[in-house]
Length: 157
Image (tube, rainbow, N blue to C red):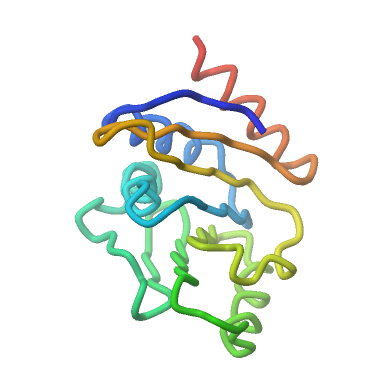
């Protein structure tokens, strides 16, 4: 896991856009962290790179999944916070979506179905102050490790 540092909202969105730039379709991005730590803000930061207006992005806490049609991909934004037990219908739908290389699946609260995820890119957010968030990024799988390496390289240049 790589520590990116303590980022203000504008920096968090800039980092999110950089991550989105390196996605090619068919990826899973897991967003973890406490309530209010910036998970949905991160998705809003990714939106312009996908050709989606950030104001369209809303937390799918009550719907479980929002779908956004972008110029680059269909983005499935999933929030598992309210899911006490795995929802088999949702997980079966996600399995089907994950086979589509013209989509990106972004999951908030992925730990609610931790055993479901294969390879993934994870961004973990924590509070470091009222207005800034500590960000960590990690990859499971070669494909995602290449994304992380490139994002880290570009972020530090």
